Length: 190
Image (cartoon, rainbow, N blue to C red):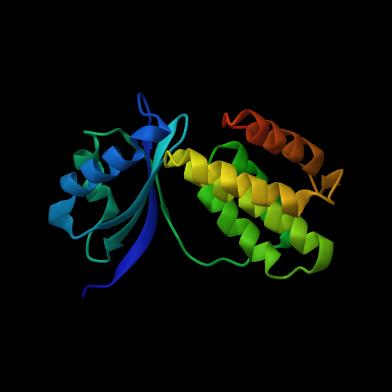
């Protein structure tokens, strides 16, 4: 088995909704089947499609660009790897990622911070991580799973108030409660 690297490949989204994630996943797997690429998941955001894939090391990731045009124009390709960032830098990056609907990456960055915390701070971070995870499921068209995870997130956030660094915890809780109560999922900024 040839070694591979994990990437997030971003395509412009001109027409797709989260409910289209499975059909885009099937289509992208079919389009790229000759390249021995593993496509784990597709997530549909407002302005982009996020394809989570492993690409063989011998293949230049740019080579897949023309084939993926059948779905959308490639705008970004991000190689995934472990990185240790300062807590403040991590939290600001996570906030920026969340606000641009890159929920999977938000989850990953916050998990790196979460590992080094305890007590109330750990529960708060776990709640925010769960909000990001819930929205990952929304982007895959999994509405019921999203709502279920939002309920778990709200439980973790229950005793947190105010601001955590530049993140408005009260605002997050309000949005999460609105989503749970209305069963209508919408994006929001933190």
